[in-house]
Length: 437
Image 1: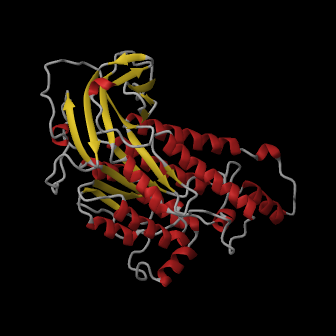
Image 2: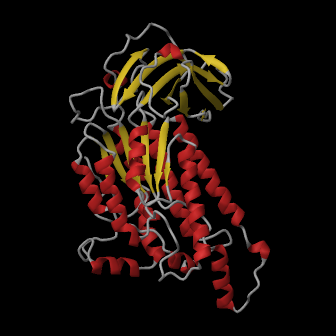
C-alpha cells in the first residue's frame, strides 16, 4: 500500500481534522498524554520504514543503461564500497567528460582498483564496469517511467515532532516548493514523518503523493512555554530527550534501508528545527527556584553532560550509518532567519537565540558529515533547493573492493583524486564498517 497510518491516532472521531476546534482540543491536552500515544505509534516505526523503502531497492542491472557483463571473479567476504564524487572546474562547472582511468581512489592511503563507474548528468545515468549481483528480495516499483537510465532517489523525512504547531503553514509551503523545484518527473521518492502527522508514502514515482502528504503535515513540537512547564529531571526534560530519540531512530532506520540501493546517489531531505536535549536550562532552574522560594541550585544536581553525551552519541551513529550507506543528508530548518521567540512565549530573546544556534548546529553536523548541505538560517528556500537539485543531478559513482581484509579496522579513510588539471573533487572522506556480531 502507498500510504499507511491515515489520520493522526489522536483524532479518532473527534472534531474535523485541521479545524480550529480540533487544534484547540489537541493543544489543551496534557503534553505527557499526547506523547504517550505518539510513543505507542512510534513502536511501529521500524517495520514501517522497512515497508517504505522496500520498493526502492533497485536491482543494479535495471539501474544502468550500458554495463559490462559480470566477470567470473569470485569474492568471499569482501564488500563492494561505492561512493559518489562531484568534480568541478575552477569556475565551479561540473566536469562530465572524465574517464575511469582519470580517477584514483585511496583507502587508508592504499590505492584501490576501480571496478564500477557511472556518470549521472541531469538525472540521466551512463554506466560501465563490473556489476555486482542485486540483493535478494528487492522489488522494483510498478510505475517506472520509460527512461530506465533517469531519475534520482529522495526520501523526505518530516520531523514534525520538532516542528512547532505555529510553523505548520510555513512547513507546508516549504514542502510545496520541494515538489516544484526539487522532485522532478522520473525521480523515485518516499515520505515519512516522525510524529502525529502519520505520513508514510512508499517509494514511488507518483507525484500525486506529494500533494496528499502536504495536506497532512501538522507540527506537534514543543514551544518554549511547553518546555518550561514540562516536568524535568537533572539531565533535562525526559520528553524532549525521548522525542529526539524517536527522530534519530527513525532516520537511522531510513538510512539503513537505503543502503540496499546501489549505484545511485541517495538523498535524505531532513526537515526539522534541530535538537537541544537540555533546552533553556537556566530558565527552567530559575522557574523551579521561584516556585520553591529558594534561589540557590545545588551544582551536583546538574547532569547536563549526560544529555549532551546522548545527543552527540546518537548524532555520531546516524552520520556513520549514512556514510556506510552512501546517503547524503540535506537538512532544512523551516524557521528561516530567527530574530527571537514569539512575543507570547515567556523566554528571554538572548536565551532563545542560543537555543536556536544549538539546534542549527546539529543540523549542520548531520549534513556536513554525510556530504550533504544544511539549509539553515535563511529565508530564501528556493536557492537552497536549487543547490540540492544541482548536487543530486550531476555526479560520478565509483566502486571498489577494499584491499584491506582486516575487519577489526572499522574506520576507513577515503581519498579520491582526478588526474585532469584544475579539477576539484567533492566526496565523502571516510566510512565505518558495521560492528561484527
